Image (cartoon, rainbow, N blue to C red; front, side, top):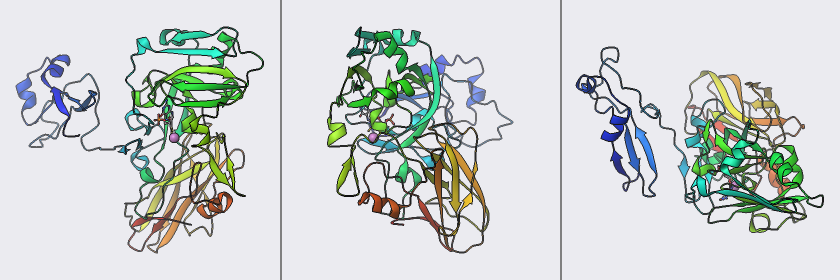
Length: 420
Ligand SMILES: Nc1nc2c(c(=O)[nH]1)N[C@H]1C(S)=C(S)[C@@H](COP(=O)(O)O)O[C@H]1N2
Ligand SMILES: [Mo]
């Protein structure tokens, strides 16, 4: 918590939980059972800790525990956090279990900060090459048939290297997965009636960046959604509250948050986000534009830097994903890439979704390199860093999805291997 955060309410929140038990007996041996609400410098109120470390720690079977509260909290012993910078915050992939990212740990990339939007004042305008331009309130949108799916969102700039001391969060923490709920974009497009000459739509956000992207119309009739909920609750402000464009499998940048306008056109608009940014070099001095789909990728999240393993059985674990569909196979090498073994995939193996994999390995105590590579249902295989550098004639850039290689040294310490 930053220093300018102020604790605004502990007592009132206690009242909210409507306690009916003898508080004195509960407080005995427990420093604080109250709900603590904290307001940060931006006026955002969060609950930081309902459960705090009891002093002294007593036998929990001998003393009344904390009463139910208005919100759940994490155990004080669990401290997964995002890694924020000025314009993004990364998901701690190495601290997560399964494949759903807790909403408060979803990565974040904001080009002009997170806007404060009142849902009652937020409309979605759909106009341009349509029979009937329409403006939809949030209420209107929620009346259409509801649809739910699980998929990842990944920033196309999701790659870091250059140091041996990088964690999965630092290497590729700009990918997260949620269960999203909303309406199919095609449903809204049928409502307004798309003119036959329309072939693109332009999506614009209601933040100070007025983030705008041109999207081929086909995507709307494939699987594009307008979502208002994430993991069972209203979508978070950081993820686009109250409305976001969801384009499963496509680069994060196209999935406009705080969506307020869609214009049907017969050509892309060539916005800043599709000319000066979000293009990448390919061989022959050429630049690729409108590279929407995220290629297959995987990373071993355990073991990873800064862990140290000991000799014996180690279950190698990680996640794999592809913007083109399902993960078909994940292969793991524990001998520096000389041989590859098939990892087990955890069901469900969903399209365009993070998929957990594991591989049981007996570490004999000798230094080695371990790595994983994803193969998706199209047959695409995740490339090595060297293969990618050769193909792109560049050592980074957007859509850079190389195999992550971990060195295990003779002491069992794990470090990132660069340039391999
Ligand atoms: N309106 C708006 N939409 C936006 C952005 C933005 O800054 N403004 N950032 C984009 C980028 S670059 C990415 S990677 C994703 C990030 O989504 P998240 O913050 O929910 O993880 O949102 C995209 N949509
Ligand atoms: Mo992004």
